[in-house]
Length: 185
Image 1 (cartoon, rainbow, N blue to C red):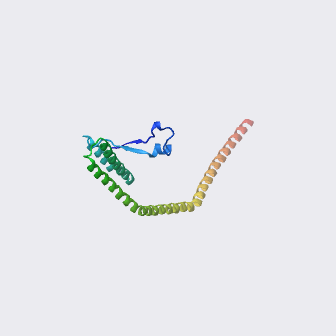
Image 2 (cartoon, rainbow, N blue to C red):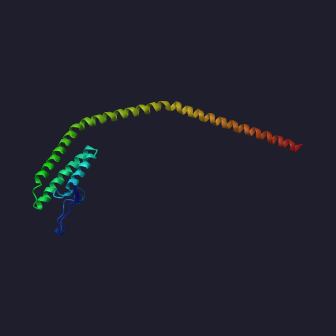
Image 3 (cartoon, rainbow, N blue to C red):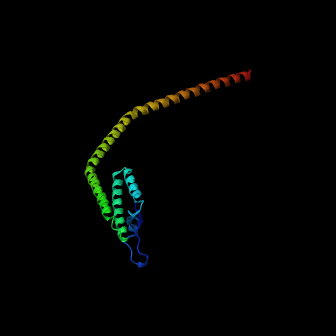
């Protein structure tokens, strides 16, 4: 699998620099080949890429993996060419072209499906907005009756508690009156 490193300016060039620091830190990723085809473990590297592709669930992530794998095949060709090894070039070039072709097909399919999906999602969103609007209106119509009921319940509860307090005070008053009468006798 590919290793990514940031491109960096040559430290000995003084004032010469790249366009911006942001470009250097975020945008300028250079693909370095991982395991080369001349290695016994190359099959494991390719297998890991395939597994990663299978377990990528979004079309965008699959498309990115295809493009990254295509770039890695190019970097593998470059690295092998620098070592003077050319016997893997045809196979790597075929794989590169296959990844690019598959990525292009996926891109074309997504581009074609985008308006249909957008229309469907927009329709679903409009239905949900109308449903929520209906629910809010329904609840707003119920609000005065619910408020009146709650108000009546509150008033009834207060009245009941007030009567209990008056009854208690009346009982207390009778007790005090009886005690006074007993004291004056």
